Length: 315
Image (tube, rainbow, N blue to C red; front, side, top):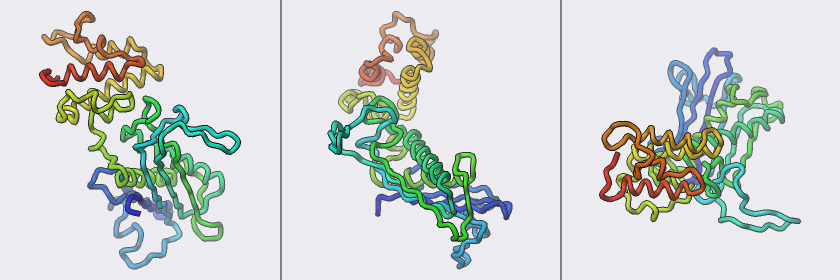
């Protein structure tokens, strides 16, 4: 399938004293979050150690195992955060829909080792958390709240391991502390990143706009129409907006108070004469213009239009 992401991780069990790790998708140059990491001197999948394919031998040594992940992905229509309002409810076999048609992220994890039931269950957790890091790192917004997405409403995952008696290694620990857990996370991250890029174009370049940062707060393109496109895609401006959004996230989580967030804003914006933070009576004081309550999105867009709109001076 052309929109499927894939990744393969290979490593040696410490009989050889070396480990190998090769997690890669097919789109490293186009902006995916794919990773390639190696712990031996010659890199992740060297001719001397990796997978023996270059030597014409496809039989894996007993002290080598691998994880292969395939993923399909779409997170533009129904990305959500754990705890968001529901989209439908079920009653006696009937479903009552309240939200939009879903997209989904499907993950297939193939582990070349024998795993007991407990390890398979833990592998599900590790793979799910790895998927979530891709969405968090890419600043994917929830479509149902002002939070960042942790998945979509219909994500699925399948994990398969080798049969007992297959001669493959017996592994019991799939946590983040274990090498096998690291393998799963690296492969899932690479495959999900690749799938999301192929399906929706999700990558760092697409996400680096003011609108992408603010759409989870209800901001639409028309709210920013007075701001030149070049400014909306300027990295410094996007960074400024990201910082302010983070203050909102921290007030929502109770990590800081709204007053403390406003004081932070005053520290970040010097007065026009450069003599320190703006006075509280200054009409251009960002702490007066930006509220950290339910009107956050509207107040921030007003501030940005005044700060970056036509005729204004950029910081």
